[in-house]
Image (tube, rainbow, N blue to C red):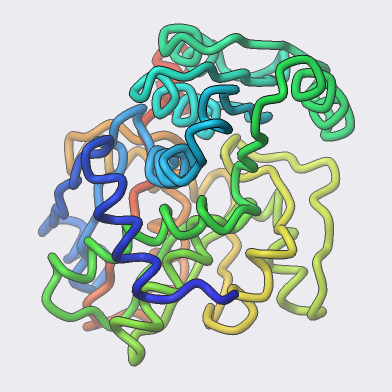
Length: 314
């Protein structure tokens, strides 16, 4: 069944006790620099530090009581694992998080602090999937996919729902793309509530599988991605890709240098903490600024779970 506006609104009501309605901020300096009027949806202020709390909360709260009692499990390099651990902790159920040994230390610590059982694995998709299968066999927990899950997509769509409600008309909405959970949810909310608005994604050039997928009309797997944007390394899913194909106008790729420059701008000018993946849409807008000149553009700032000991501009 397609995800409807009613589904998105119900998800917003369902998750309200577990999330923050994050602010929408503006910045005159960035407006002047870009030539557009920018509205930043600050999911870096979200519980667990990222928009992923929305999808995780919706998935957890949509489970039956019997399934809930057995807990939830996932594989994640960071933000989804943190979010699922936090959502599970909030309702008093177990969470089992498979993490690559190379995940940022700040994200490992946060998952542990939220009470989840962490199982480390080698940093390959096969290792993540194999280890997760072992965990689920042992615990009988429910797998909550980081993005290729309708409850997760519907939860992520609530960020754009709020952005649209709080911004009084937008010409475009931008989000980054990795697995596509946020982008597909954003595209659905825009389709239902702002059908005239363009939905445009930013993607690292070193992990441009979504861009390639749109070009050829089928999912191109992410193989050996190389980018500072560690939250955008995964491939699109069979649930996210069709939505993106239908409702996303364009994916703009940006270099790591452009990502770092945009990240620094937000730190310096807006005085807020964001992680590299979060800066990708602004980097994309600045790269193609002429396309956005004079427009009102909503940008979802996805998260702020950055390792302060290894900042790219320190």
